[in-house]
Image: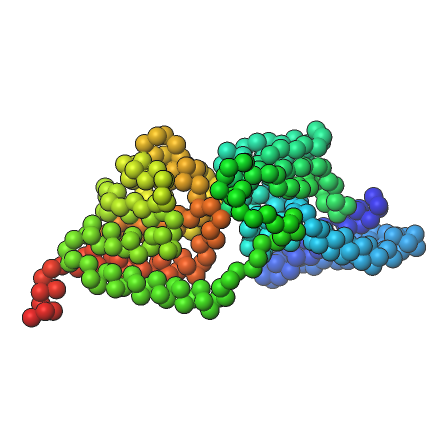
Length: 391
């Protein structure tokens, strides 16, 4: 095995040097002799070193075992994906390397989204630090661990996360295998009164009731409702325009709608949130203390975040708690209100989704971006224009 690794490293180094030689073809004519000497040296190296090593490995049977190994890897990969338990493979930083079908269904991750992103992004903020710490300890070889966490999509359900070290044969570092097992909901909670389902059903929630065509139609209906609200808003009343726009978006499109007027010194004018939510605390928050709002007010690009990693990105409310944590935000959209791409920013619109609601998609973000321009135009519409139109 050591000889195979050495052979692989030699080949990799050779390929890199050949790439460097190819890039040297543009050197002046007077220097081509040096490049030619280097190329001849590399060819000699292949003939004198790599080829004998290849023949020796082939004679010992190391190279002939490649096909069975690949077959076994495919089998193990298929078993991993089909395990009925939610299982994920992460690195020491809790970044997902692989996640099986049961885990994507259980966490609510979209296909292909989780890989390369921290698994902690699916957890409540209060559980993230402990999970990272335990994952790092397992990766360092300090033994298997187990802890209770809570998913953002179902914060009332305790989930037992079991962590064990794993060293894949082709991987240079130790990985961590994470097995997620749902616990029992607290007695008396609203979720506990829902009819029980089997474990298999819990790991594989039913597919969406609406197809992509229906979701597209819903976005068109939302845009139509927004246009109607903006056309009927009183001209010259910027706060009323923002309030009308927020009323269209809440709750059909977002669980929270936060509107800030102005750019140099934004003022919070509207906050709509879920029932019994700390709406008053968010309304009393100073927009200048919200990094996302400040960046958007300066003319920044629209921001779409799914399972925001930084709990301080929207600042803290009057109770000194991070807004994203207290609102249990699972995805957010923050867009500047600007009528033209080179025009001034009239305000900032921020949308939150929380709980088990699907995260904002790119298509929905594009729809909100279009509506933000219409809102900005409505905010700058003057009464005189309306009077001229009626005459």
